[in-house]
Amino acid sequence: MPSYSSSHKVNHNAGDMFRLVADVEQYPQFVPLCQDLHVRGRKELENGATVLVADMTVAYKLFKETFTSRVELRPDEHTILVEYLDGPFKHLENTWTFEDLGEGTSNVGFYISYEFRSRTLGSLMGVMFDRAFRKFSSAFEARADEVYGT
Image (cartoon, rainbow, N blue to C red; front, side, top):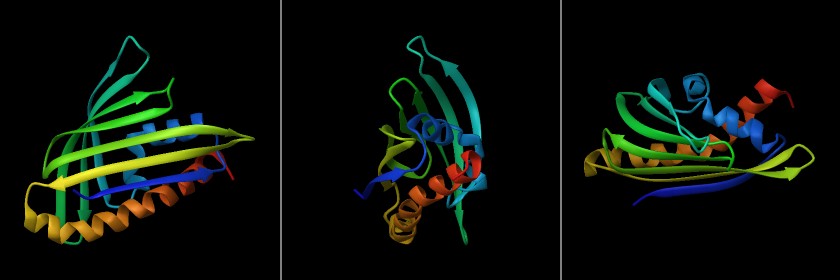
């Protein structure tokens, strides 16, 4: 099963980076391959977490697919957990972590594992998805610089 992980130091605090990644409605403006994102519902949990159910449409050339995920935002832990619900994948799991390092910097951790239902689709899209995931860190860091300043 393909997976990708990265850990990246950024010049923004963990809270700001958490809020930036948690603002999923803005993804079509800057996330590679994200053409559209629609939040179906949002629920506040008693533990301070928020759960979203969101449809994300990814597109590249002739390829266009929409998938649905459950996104759990845990601000007290600076963690975001994404659980796949429906779409072209057999499996998709994604985790974001944010750790303050001091002096306005933080470490952003990103992990994703996925498997397409169709081997053909997996063969066609696998390399392109890997490239996109490798660009995620820089896309979010550039967005943070735009939103919060450098």
